[in-house]
Amino acid sequence: MIKRFLKSAGYAIDGFLLGVREERNVRIDLVAMIAIVRLAFFYDFDRTQWAVVILLVFLIPSLELLNTAVERAVHKPDTDHYMPAGQAKDAAAGGVFLMALGAVVVGFVLFWDTAVFSRILDYYMSRPLNAAAVALFAVGAYLFIIKDNFEKKRK
Image: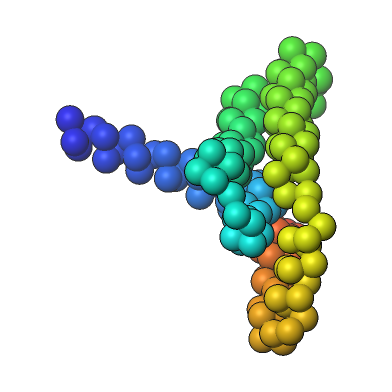
């Protein structure tokens, strides 16, 4: 039983890594996940608010991986357009879009606090190394997100 569980976990990790390697939106979601969790440390969130933040930052990339699964499952290699396959892809993408939109609204509810914005700005402006770390993160995140563009040019 443990052996089956570990084998299943391995397949799940393979699926996650496939999404990271081949899906730009999964990489965008992961970068956003890190940034949102880092930002959340500036707030005095209670356990429920933390639970909502954690749930949403894991839910969006999870739905993106499910969208990838639907796209790959219904993809037809021929040049004909098969209408139900396209509709399935569109519906899956629409589900991700709606959840992301809902997460943005929840994010505004949880994070909109001008006093905290001021505190965050002061924190980074008064500590040049922290500001440099944010800039380095931004550059690294950009390169991570667009990495498939470099790989396509090399081939």
